[in-house]
Image 1 (cartoon, rainbow, N blue to C red):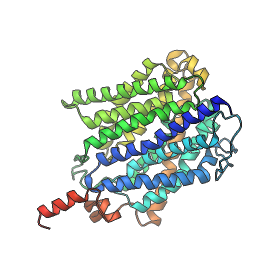
Image 2 (cartoon, one colour; image 1 turned 120 degrees about the horizontal axis):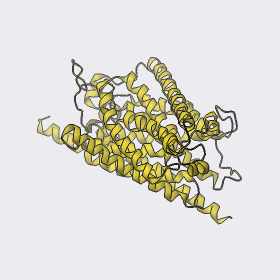
Image 3 (cartoon, helix red, strand yellow; image 1 turned 45 degrees about the vertical axis):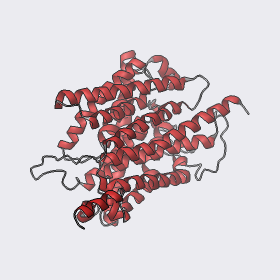
Length: 422
């Protein structure tokens, strides 16, 4: 067997493991960013919804993305049986696992908009429908030789396909679920419902940062020219720049350096560079990360002011930064890298507005599709399932107890009860 084939397969398998392990980062990030009474619920739903996404992707998702069909949807290769595709350059089974990992991340991002108030049954049903009807369609358009790919849409590792798609589903959920109890006062002013463990949140960001090397660098799906190293370099620079710029902007505006903002800045830099990591220079990666860090701070404030309660900041980190990352290739893509990886050079490198226009079309259509279809699905679910949200009493008690019958921190709850003489 060809050595390069084996090395490519091994590299992408490692990358797939890194991307799947990002679920652990999301568990820490989401649990740390929310209240203690919901920590066990958040951890548990992440595991079982990834299981659902895996099965749906195996049954139909992979076929909808990569199967033979038309410019809008694939119509073959359902219930993937482990067959190998000649000329792919690596094991098809490994490629399947790698793509499955991305589908799971998109779903986890979407669930950021459900946090601390959605029924467990809603997670289950939406996981199936999003994994079948939302993510695969957008992915086919861009990665499966669909109509956006024909236009030359640049999205190397998923600022649009994964992050914007997930964020638009999160927006639909957030609008229908309404804010958490106690988030807003009668006059509309917001209250801070602080996460219970900032260390968990920081550790989650670090796990995601490391996993992103599988996400972006793994998307090269090859080792023969070692281009993955260049992609990894751009990824790391953008993350660092995003963290620093977000910290500085919060310091300047608030008079204190806000840790959650800094952490979200790092993630925003990662999200933004995901589309452009194979198309831009390291210097441009730093600029992309800096702008992402600034955008995430102001977008977090904007959504809060508009009474859009987004506990995990999915709309800012994955939505706004996903839009900026998608646009950034239209500005910064170099002629050499565009020729190597598809599409055209960006505006700042003599390419004019053509690539930027394609990127805008991709944002509008992919993001619009994800939002509208998710909103339709959730609206129907709301009627059929007698609401999407737990009762006020269940929300006050916490989803750990109301949905699972136990607490993520049982000893601390017991100590609190003992202190009160319960």
